[in-house]
Length: 488
Image (cartoon, rainbow, N blue to C red; front, top):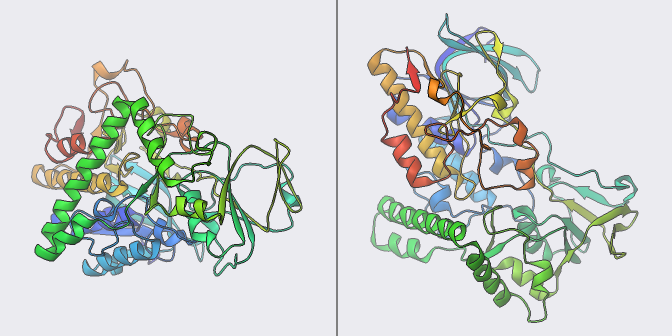
């Protein structure tokens, strides 16, 4: 990037799954708009380039995690990280996006000026630390929801005493050799559930150490319906039908678990018992303390997690950590787990808008004091959209819809000759009851940053619906001039 200031109609922050998808939609739906992508890392792909731990994969099927406009053609619906990264790269190449991406460019500060009707972006080169300036009319933040710098690791007592390797999945060393080692994986979420079967074949033994269990569901790695359809229908039609089928199943299953949590819990645990040995203590090790979808449900493709447990190559220990020792982990029950390698699969550090400083007409914006507009904008902040996906379905389903909404918005502004759109609270909204940014969902990683997130209101459009079909109406069909989004 040159040291002289550049202007673009739209700047997309992030060249991961969401950012590349947004760029594709801008290319086709707003061909008259200039845009660029700012990517803080040296490569595209986001999450799917960052995470390199053994077995890294999606926990959603690729017919919904993939883009709505680009079929997923592999027979394997639950795909591994390298396959997903290749998909993103292929799409970026097909839409000729590589020359539009500015790598190693981290957006630090965004300042809106009403007088100039534009954003001024302060961007740091992550290699040279040079600071440059870019101007744009619209800012579309696709930076994800967590910090790429470091993962979350609790302050385990005496952690410095351990003589072996302590690894976090977010910073996995290249070519790390864990073969014939005793491995302890701390955590019970999706990453731990992925690591256990992936490492069980090579390690001497794998222990998943959890404070409390999560829901784990076995699911076929291949979608037979999709694979049959591809043999008789064009790829695009087969993909669209499979995507629609899977969305319907996801939404119906989620609704059922929320309406009948006790019955859903019994059904999930009944399926679990069929997957483990008869003498396995399901009550202690695989029965969560919460209802289904109070936290995200973990996926085990073809039941690989349960197979690892049945084989004896892996085990679950449910306990609390007393301290680390030179040779492993001492538990509060008095048990000691020997280890050569400890993996802290303990989660992510969430952030808001990629930790970008936002200023509007010289005033710093505290997003926690804002109400979210449809889960994609912020009260009082003009010409900005941000992608936050679904917690109860595939992230890309919502990212696709938000980018489609952005294109509608930009085309409407072109038609009406307006330069600014800003969601503002109506007089009747001033005394709204605030609610968390995401309702009925309370994993630890979200609770840790809830005080930094914008609020939901108790009425439309100040809500963040985690409902695909509702969002389709709101983003694709509802009028843009709704009395809240103000254009000038």
